[in-house]
Image (cartoon, rainbow, N blue to C red; front, top):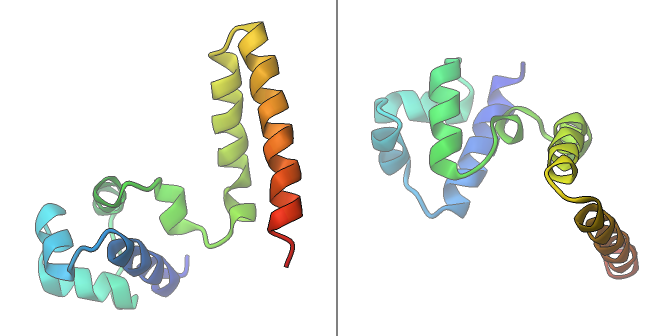
Length: 112
């Protein structure tokens, strides 16, 4: 595991949530020094701390652990499958049609 990159992703999400290191550390019940070391990759973080930080930042743990959407794709597929499974057949068909439509728009407007 690349703890430096995990720390950088935590920092990115922390800033996106307008939280200081001090506030995040306090909410995660860790010291500010430990939070700083996590963000700089100078220490490993435990699973319970990682989960708590993810909860505070309103992200999934895999978003902290993996850099790219490709790495998280199996998790995303599982999440989509669970969503489809919770639908009636008609709801599922509608969701699929909506997703296809959104994908066309994404391809059209997000071309780099």
